[in-house]
Image (cartoon, rainbow, N blue to C red):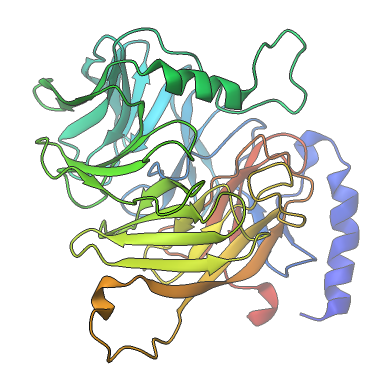
Length: 412
């Protein structure tokens, strides 16, 4: 596509941005990136899930989203038809990798809704002080954390202009909650019998719990809190075996976090900064061997969350604004990253297998997010065919779910 034709697209696009919310554009080509964007949702306030929550049906055809009333619906990725599944308010956990059942919590009870019939079945009651976070690969277990005591409530995001009556920022509340050191433990519930088992008692703030997408007995979790103070990322088996620290700090103010599994469950990826806010990496830990790979990226390309394609060949990032940890001057983009391992000219020297493989991420901008308010995190995910990246955004006013095509329009 020529520059002239892109300019012609941009003119009606800018005009359409000024229309009422119910007249927002459904499809366009970003004039800055040449990538096609489609709006998947029709109702303002619809949002995609957190970046590591599986939201795709096993056949790859449907996307799970939350609705404005706190309910759950699916969007057909081919027809873009929205199909309500569960009325709100509920808290979504995940779409099952095996059956496509939608697991959610309503009040103090865990349910699973059938994608086909929309009927829900009760799994079990949530333990006192408990929070359900994940469902394993074969859907035989749900897992979560139990807190003994009353934790400080930490908001999921901080409003751009906090009310004068608000006593603390989100960062201050995280610090206060971290300093409580309340007794906690992990738990699993058998989805067939309802049997609850607790394990790994700790006074660390246990959070960000997620099952491996392929190994039903493998859990990833974090020690939550200020990242420069915690040893954050850990693996553990559901039988309380194999506790492994994924990353160990080697310098002051080094931080690592927002960990997630690769689609094949073999690698844990995470945001690494050495030190905080200065040098940026996407780091990987291979579970079976302990081998490590670090991909370097620029300050502007740092993202609130990263993700990896299902074939493991590409990464994505949702960017960030100038007020976040990277203090990026031009970071408000949805990014595609192509990884490159740098040549090892000392490969014939002994001990190379113990060293970190170094590489670089080559970034490509997909969506101009300059109008997006980053108090809403975009949370990028690849569609199962790896042809699109789904994200949520308020760049046109109301929150909607969007998808951007990985292949640029002018490359077709």
